[in-house]
Length: 120
Image (tube, rainbow, N blue to C red; front, side):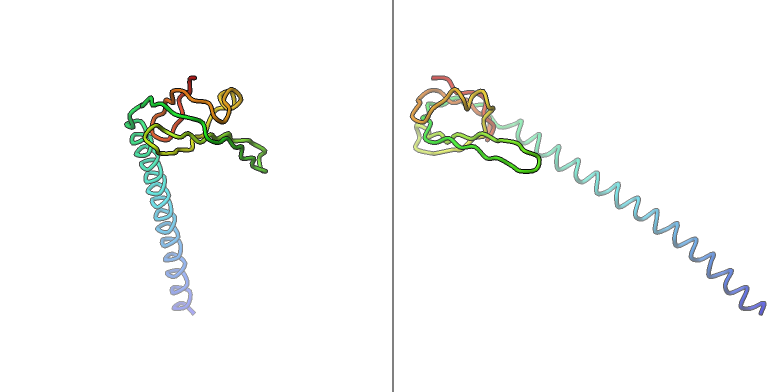
């Protein structure tokens, strides 16, 4: 009986030790995951910030709204035909969406895929 009791004590001690190790490993994994996510966000922000701000002649060829159900939000988009022949769709603030119409020509200012302004 002494051997069984000694074995159980040793086994329970092992379980407590391995439980601590598992908790430490989970904690380290979470720290690593958070670090990788923050690095990815920082990389994307730095890359986006490095895009040059350009102003080019453009014509509004289309407008659309995208409504999401949960939570209820509306995103506003406009498609611009650039002088180079390229077309690009950009997300706009609501105030700009209301002021432009299809067929409007003017100067489009953007930084990468981020809309800055459109002036007629």
